[in-house]
Each structure stands twice: as C-alpha cells, then as structure tokens.
Image (cartoon, rainbow, N blue to C red; front, top):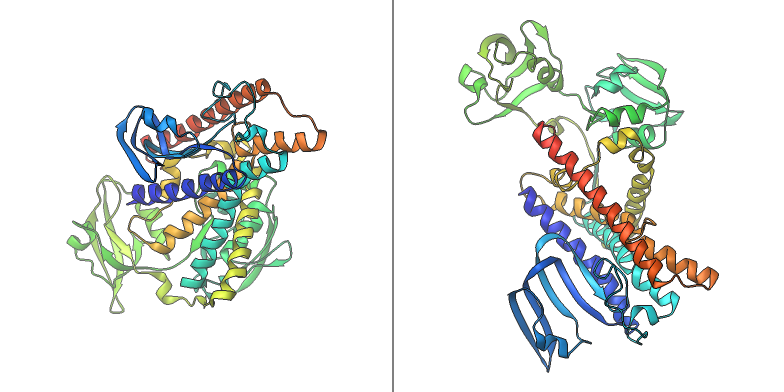
Amino acid sequence: MKLLALMLSLSFLVLIHEGGHFFFARLFKTRVEKFYLFFNPWFSIVRAKRYNGKWHFSFFSPKSPEEFAKYPDNTEWGIGWLPFGGYCSIAGMIDENNTDGSKLSAVEQPWEYRSKKAWQRLLIISGGVLVNFIGALCIYSAIIFTWGTETLPLKNVPYGYDYNQTAQKYGFKNGDYVLSIDGKDMYELKDVINTLLLDGGKQIKVLRNNDTTTFALPDGFAKEMVGAGEKQFAMPRFPFVIGDFANNSLGEQAGLRVGDSLVAINGQQTTSFSEFKAKLSRYVNADVVISYYRNNILDSLKIHLGKDGLIGAAPKNFLADVKTEHHSYGFFASIPKGISYGVETLVSYVKQFKIVFSKEGASQLGGFGTIGSLFPESWDWFRFWSMTAFLSIILAFMNILPIPALDGGHIVFTLWEMITGRKPSDKFLERAQMVGMILLFALLIYANGNDIFRWLTGKL
C-alpha cells in the first residue's frame, strides 16, 4: 500500500510539473516533441500522437513509428516503463534529453525554445516549479476545506511528553511540558520542534512535577539529534492500556486482556507506553513478569519473550483521552488558510537545509525508500493528499536550486542573459548540463544507498 501511494503521488506530481513546462511552451508557440510519464529507455509501454484528426497508438515499441515523424509539430504522448519521474522534451533546448546538443538544428528555428525571448524562456523553464508550488497550495486548501484542522495543545496532554535520548541527555525529562523557548510561549509540539531544530532555540522553560525549571541547550543540539537518527523529538506520554492484540500475541496467550493497564516489568515501574516498550526490549529471549491493573485490581503474570522482545499488544488510542482543537473552514476561508500553511511549510523546509548541508544531516539523507515510509500502511486520503502536497513543495524547491540539469540552473543562465545581455553558448550549456547530471546521479545513488543500508540494518 505504501508503494502504491508513493507511485500515485509521484506520478501526479510529475504530470503537473511537466504540464507546467508544456503549458508555457505551447503558450509561446514552442514545439513540444514528447511528453512522458515515467522514463522509457529502450522501449515505451505506449506511444500516442494525434494527427489527421484522430489518435494513433504504438504499444511496447523501442522507438517512435516513422509515421509519427511526419507530424513534428504534434506532441508525442507516452508512458515509459521505468517509474521514476517523467519528462517534457521541448524543441531547441539542451536538457536531460539532449545533453550534447545533437538534436539542435544548425540554424535557430522559430518554434524552438532557444529562439524565444529571454522572458518567455524564463516562464517556460520555471513553469514546472510554479505549478508544483501552486498545486501544493491548492491541495492544502482542499484538505483544510474537507477535513479542517486538528491541533493538540501542549497543555491538553495529561501526562506530559516522552523525549528521545539526545533531548534527555541535555536536560529534558519524561513528563515535561515545554512552556517557552527563548521567552517565546509554545502552543503545540510542532512549535517546539520548529523553534528548537530550525530556529536554534536554546533557553528552555518547562513544567516539571508542578514546578517550573529552566535549562539551556548547547550549540549543535539539532545536528546531534539528527545525526543520531532519532525520528521523533518527543511524543505524548500516555499509560499503556491495551487496545488490541496482534495475531499469535504472547501477551494474549499468557492471559492479558483488552483494557488491562500495564504498569511494571519485573517489579520496575513503567508509567508510560514508551517507557514500557523501552524496558521490555532489554529482555529478549527471557522471562518477564508483567504487572497490570484490571478492574482496579493489581495482578501479574509471566511471559517468555521471543527474539523481537515484544508481547504483541497495541496501546489504546491516547487521543480518546485528550482534548484536541478542531477548526472547520468554509470554501473561501480555506483558501487563505491553505496558502498560509503552504508558505509556512516551504519556509520550514528551506530552514532545514542548514542541517541537511552538514555531516550529520547528510548521513540521514534518504531516497525513495525513506519517502515511501512516510505514507501510511493502510489507505488514508487525508495522509495521501497531505504527503502529496508536502512532496510538491519539496519538488518545487529542489528544482529551483541553481544546479545545472535542474530547472534552477536554466533559470540562473536565463537571468544572467537578461541582466548582462549575453547568452551562454550552446557548448557551455552542454557541459553545464553534463556536470549537473553527474551531480544529480551521485546524489541519487548516495541517498538511495543510505536507504539500502538502513533496510539491511533494520533501521528503515
């Protein structure tokens, strides 16, 4: 299901991205030779072109039919077999489909990209980024209109929060409520994470055991946490009340029941689900005595754990015991709210790059496996569209980076031409495109190599 969601999401984003290029190219009467979903090295699943008033198709063909070449002004549409993106091949442009300029005619033709005015070329090349960003804003607005917004204020979590090991190392304790950072009041956990990791907040004020405590975080806290590979800074603290059992659950077989509240392991008190899970993992292939409350009566039983160190029980949904704040929005109110949320998402993502471009951040880069893991295991339209909007923001930002072979590289060269009045030579563009492609392939191999390593070590 995760793979299906990832494929559908990326396919949609590729279509609208390349559609942005296509729209502006045709607007300025530039010939679009091919428009493909997925790449098609060696052969295509389907090729289609409309001419003489009807559509013509070719299936599983290694190259375009000769008849297609007789109508060069008509776009060839197709679906490739390699499901990693897509492309819009524009006549007279040096890009990933024409890195050596071999497809360029000796003389500029009026239908070619290179013959258009600089401002027209700027719109053609930036069309994909614009559509991705605008598309994300539209999706966020639609999400807010359909589902509204749901927030969980920090103060509404009755047992406080559990923190990761790096956070506990520098002063946080399980059960703390963050009140303020650098004097700024915190409303929800997202505010805490953004202020600490993206804005570099240091002075922490927490509520601990009905008293306030302050402490300071060191420089480099965010990088250390990212480098440790800890996926969550904190999560709501809640007792382990059994909500369901897995198939062949050791806990159920030993006598535990839905509704039991697990409070200790081998006499060691556990006040939250995360604490119970952490302590239980120490007893792999060993006997443990689980203490629990049932109908307000304390009891215990013995379980022999397997190699996974689990009892096969899931906690009750803690949100049933907390008060979230839901806000509904009408059609017109959802639009500015969606735009605001999309802009905030972009700003937060841009801020993350100060961590990404560090040794610790680079070690946590991921490829398709990491992206796919963000989708839920069962189909959820809210999560699907939320992830699609977020990926659209990422795609827009990544493509506008000033790297040759990306849209941003072409944008920089075009802006240089508009400012100086000097157009980069085709030979320079060819070499820049080749360098950019090498950099992108190296990054792709590195990121997906990280995924493979995490998969082999069980950390993905």
